[in-house]
Image (cartoon, rainbow, N blue to C red; front, side, top):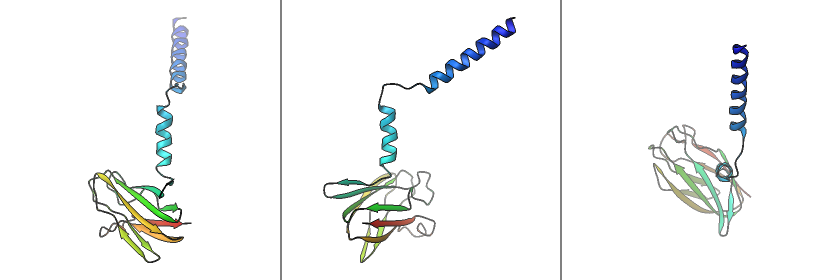
Length: 141
């Protein structure tokens, strides 16, 4: 009988832990964090142009978090976030445009360019980084 009681108590405890883990709270901070994660990968159209966030791999690997970006024609700002100690920058090239940001490590920098509709390449201009995979396409509509 004690074995059955022990197993029943164990099952009730497991159920209580499972319900507690799945329960929500009225605090919006968790929802805000999730919303921030999705908005950093999307374009934000602001007065004066479009703001895009591009993040270098935080471990120092030669990759950006995105290989395709989209923006409205006009002023486009790309914020490069680089939390690693490996230096990176971002260059936008195409349709007569060739502009590069400051080179940074453990920080962020902005590159603002005025772009006409079309396709542009973006990449890290540090020697070997583009060849290592730090490149993508920016489509301007």
